[in-house]
Image (cartoon, rainbow, N blue to C red):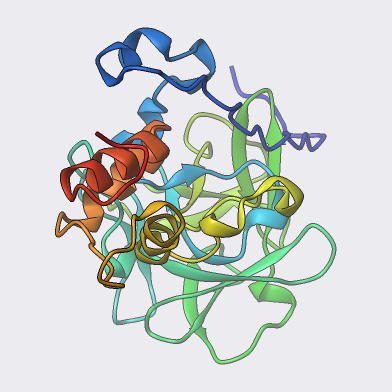
Length: 258
């Protein structure tokens, strides 16, 4: 059954609670609370999380239709749906757009070719404009846990089953118009509760914690040579602090490590 979107619902940004610290590392799996469950959707999409409010539609975003398939820009100014990605993979470069606010509850998108996405009078989504006008403004609509994108002509974006082209022709939103807008930027958190050590990228965070806890003997920093990918995964899974401690412990550079 096709439901017409009539109202917008904005979700709240949910912050994970602090996990209880384990006294012994061998018990850390037992001590994990229900609040620190892994976000399977985030892992499946390579760290790209589901946007549910217009304020988050800024910077790098992707539009997912179906299962791990994203709107992809073509060099002729048209758009198609890309091939399915495997679990753990994010969108490809041609499937990533730059989003900008464009008035109340609206946004604009720029493709990797430097052109803004708009809609033609016959309902085809095109990316050939060098500036944002009325036809390049889009409105996100959330209702009943589903997302759709409304064009300036009050038609919803979808993908044509026949040739996989991207259009905006339907006055109502159904299964073909449902999509997910995704972002990979760090979610906004309350800076009042964010430790100073966690400001910056993950490399800087690790350096900050090493400086804080390292037993200085020769005044040289001892950093673990492990990949930052390990830290990215730990952040997604909610055990960043434990992973940082493990990495410092291997370097025997933490005064709280034996």
